[in-house]
Image (spheres, helix red, strand yellow):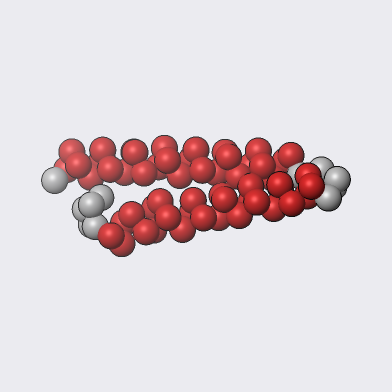
Length: 66
């Protein structure tokens, strides 16, 4: 599987990033309703950073092998 394949981008980048955005959105909704929510935003941002790092790692790893 090449990092330019749409399946790779969808699995590694799009679906996990949407999950991270969902965590951030849930945190914002909790903050608006005065229920906390900062931990959701924190974990959402951490998750998105991990997704970006994983995409960079896999794209350079597969790019070097191709």
